[in-house]
Length: 239
Image (cartoon, rainbow, N blue to C red):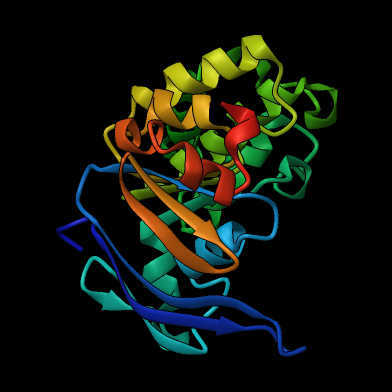
């Protein structure tokens, strides 16, 4: 994949119980762009993000990553290009040390020995967490856990970073670190959040979801002026 773009065309997704989670989503994210997916709880943010690495596949419509359509047959290629950090960090921290957690992904891709060690150390250094290498993940703060999860994704060398509610379980100091960290990356980034202040700090573009539908797609600066829309999306309280 030579271009790290995302193209979503008329994406619809319905859960097995009949719940319509996403309706007629059309979205294009260019190489190097950072966008915030905004909305209240239940708006469809996490469901949309799970389509970007094939965790979920469309009921109808298409998700295309760098020229490859997401299907059961292309999942390996899609997941090598898209690294996702889920909302619950504990779901991604299952090894006995930070180092082993970060090594898990690249080891599965065939890295070993000194190359693996260098890859893990670089990822941890990039997120400012190399000093945590030998710690047990459950002894870390919320912000430290988030950094380690990001390092685990970076170690797999993705082209696109997807983060689901990265401010969850993070204190103000940790939040400042996460903002600085994300702004230092040149990756294409898609970040879901209901925190407008955070979204404005890391993204120029915002996409607002309400009940599975896009009700705004544009500059964050314009969104922040639209009080009525923020009320409609039930995210004004974060402003």
